[in-house]
Length: 218
Ligand code: AP5
Ligand code: MG
Ligand code: ZN
Image 1 (spheres, helix red, strand yellow):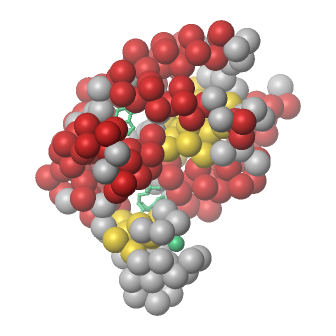
Image 2 (tube, helix red, strand yellow; image 1 turned 90 degrees about the vertical axis):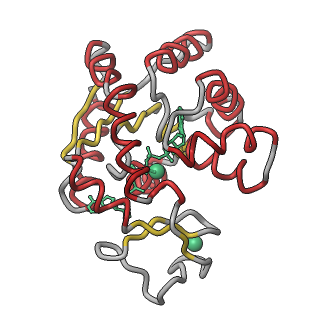
């Protein structure tokens, strides 16, 4: 099973990816998480991409394609994968198609999580992330039990640098301009499945799960 989660910043890609990955036994792969890890470790890649993440601009395609090809070559993707935040441009989507075709593989489905931009600003400015395990919280809609401490691993919760309002608005504009064309791209390929991401987390998950099962049974 090879899946893509597509949707604007704050749509709930990371939240749903963790659940889908656990349920279907496939690794969730977030290019954003990989870049943030590289920045934290100050690797060569991390130093190159830092300015793009902090301003909410896209990392250049060649840098993105390099880390994705490396990640998809890992043995844990043999049974499938779930991409979160990749592809984000038409050239990235074309490169992925080429990469899979070379291995005689194809995508199972592309799940678009659609949410109104006004809701996204509120979601992202209230988001908190576990510095240790990456679990996602929200100050209003998904509060941790003990303030500032991860329920799962007791790591410290932090706010992402790109979650300040001005940067969030830029990320939404970048999505509309550079990533939204992929909706048409995957619709034409007969792969697109759209879910309403404004519903509660558990309802969105149920809708995605049902959609995936329908597709696999076809
Ligand atoms: P990335 O890390 O991919 O960020 P993003 O797309 O902006 O998405 P987010 O992680 O902000 O949102 P999400 O959809 O995962 O939502 P979440 O589940 O956390 O990319 C970051 C940066 O890296 C980019 O700006 C770019 O610079 C670079 N980059 C990455 N990939 C790239 C690529 N392929 N090409 C070029 N550059 C790339 O949920 C958000 C909040 O809402 C949480 O608090 C959550 O609890 C809450 N929530 C979730 N679902 C619901 C719900 N249904 N109801 C209420 N609250 C909800
Ligand atoms: Mg995310
Ligand atoms: Zn944690």
